[in-house]
Amino acid sequence: MTQSFPWYKSYPAGVPHEINPDRYPSIPAVLDDIAARYPDKVGYTNMDCGLTYSRTAALTKELAAYLQSLGLKPGDRVAIMMPNLLQYVIAMYACLRAGYIVVNINPLYTSREVNGTLRDSEAKAIIIIENFAKTLQNALPGTKCEHIITTAVGDLFPFFKRTLVNFVVRKVKKMVPEYSLPNAVGFNEALEIGRRHGFTAHEIHNTDIAFLQYTGGTTGVAKGAILTHRNLLANLQQVGYWLASACKEGEEVALTALPLYHIFSLTATLSFTQFAANMVLITNPRDIDGLAKECAKWDFSIIVGVNTLFTAMLNNKIFCAHKFTRLKVTAGGGSQVQRTIAERWKQQTGCNILEAYGLTECSPGVCGNIPEAPWDGSVGVPIPSTEVSIRGEGFRDLGCCPSPDKIPEYTGEICVRGPQVMQGYWNKPEETAAVLRDGWLRTGDVGHMDMNGSITITDRKKDMILVSGFNVYPNEVENVIASMPGVLEVGVVGVPSAKSGETVKAVIVRKDPALTADDVKKYCRTQLTGYKMPREIIFVDSLPKTAVGKILRRELKDIQ
Image 1 (tube, rainbow, N blue to C red):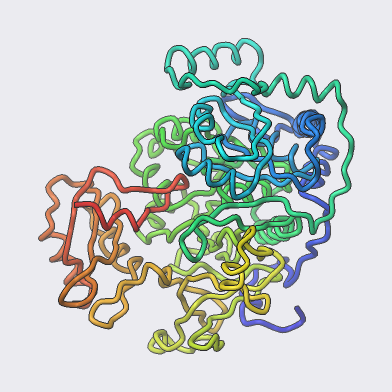
Image 2 (cartoon, rainbow, N blue to C red):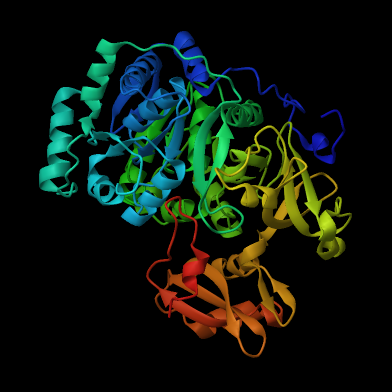
């Protein structure tokens, strides 16, 4: 790109307009580079057990050698199904090192969902935590998955801790349902076989596919986004330059609470590898007390999260009792960070939330706010080598909005072009053609761009509520209700109405048990015009969410 774009003037000092996505030949090359320069630096920690970068690199070669011994060929798909464990890191790099394509699977998936992913990707092998092996047993019929590696939680811990942790998980907490996978091989046995077999280096080109990252995408049905090594490497550089002023090589501690099988957490962790950070892997982020204790123990400097995670942490007494003096990067994404949460986080930690925007199809990063800039409700500006265009009817470029009163006419679909954009959807040419046009990815998100190139997202195009012909964006209503002192969490959705086509429904988790629907309506009348008002208000104990903490709006419709 040689053009001058409005967002360039917003870039922090030292951030280039363009990056070189061909700096590294592959994703494992980044690990090898850091391992060569920081061999004894701990790179990954889980439950107080750490792996140095050199040990990590060595283990990935052993597991890659085992996979090669199975007769798998470069380009074959290998599924990984586990939470944040040291074994995930080894498995992911091992697959990529041998030229295989990683298929991440949420370990909380049902057998039906696992079967669908395995069938669509035609994965020939899977590396899975034994806690969910029963799910896999029921999911295997009709798939091409012939090779199974099972791992226990503590498999990479020192002997005594490994023995204790695995005993407690299996026998005391009874977290491993009985299963039958006769041909499965244990993780440590696979490493031993690989060690004897020896790894045969495979030349990887950065245009080779690295991941099939399954997503609901812009149209709802799960599809595998084809992400190459180059796609991810571009995003690593883009994020790396963006955070370079805040991060010091070899000194950072990054708390990894979001699951690595999700693209946001995966790319963030790969990015922090560039800084030779110690990534503290949180296996069960739903245990907020446990997460808060890890936060206090490590006095971390970086955290990546979503609004619901920040909310849970801010409402935890253990977390709030600690002052995080080292924290300097808090990246928020996945869904909009609400103003009240951003303000409370700043007050508690002294660190602003750097809100970013991305999607699986973009590896995922597209935009980001300037590090340490105060929260302003926008998702910032396009990162280096990234073009963003707001498109209206007929795919017309709407340009930048000159003033706040002009926002409606400058609001359109956010489209993205850059080296991080996916190659398409796996075996789905029609779906690919629907979202990729002349190199532009149609995101399905709606927003506008100001004269400085800063982008504000209004909402998902598909989540928009149409009330008597007027557009209502759930995010706006959610932000208003979330600002009430008695509200812990809220999700807003449109429901059918005979009178107006659709009407607004709010599903609320109370902080104050005395809060009533009338209280909410009374408050909303002071903040929202009539057609945006929630007509139906339901109180619940918890909201349905994805594994990464995004509220599942489609499930709110059925809550009574």
